[in-house]
Length: 255
Ligand SMILES: Nc1ncnc2c1ncn2[C@@H]1O[C@@H]2COP(=O)(O)O[C@H]2[C@H]1O
Image 1 (cartoon, protein in one colour):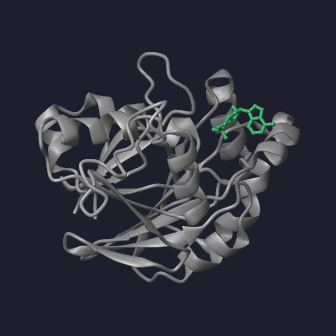
Image 2: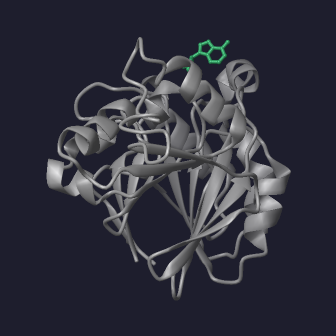
């Protein structure tokens, strides 16, 4: 299995795209603006979206992706997320006003967009691997996702402030080699991080010793105003063998 980073930024603005990762050819984690770099035929190959939460930087391109399937008579998509997130999609995106209700078109029995409610622990076979919903702690209901390939496993925190249940979970995955963790603000902005359900280096620090020493820690969702300072802060506060790198669009992670 391979995971291609289509978007990992907190905001748009060239060259940044918001969160979207493509797993093999048919599965997306989140549907931020990163998905717009795919060709239409690649979009038609996507069959499922593992959605972390309802904020627009993570689901804002879902109406347009569903429209590619509808207008080109594609196979349609299934979105997996918590019930609250799916309710928000129905109420605010696919409501017939902001966008056609593709959860009921062309028919309620076989719509272009199918919504499947999941909770942490729900496991879904994808390709030769497994995707499992993980707990998260954000300003709206949110999930992380664990992706287990044949040999290696990657955990994604989604947007989340401190969430001990997430870190306990991933530290018990024997094949874990990679963690993508959001780190939005520097320590000086801990107040905003707490209000919005985001991480700073100091908030992340207590969880890092739970990871195997050679884990790759990829940082996503960095506020563009504090990128270099934030990475310096993390490296100066934690220098204990973890390989820490900012996640970049276009990167491929093999599992
Ligand atoms: N009080 C607030 N709570 C949550 N998000 C906020 C608030 N004020 C501003 N925001 C912004 O809204 C964004 C929603 O998505 P994010 O959580 O990625 O980042 C959040 C902030 O950039």
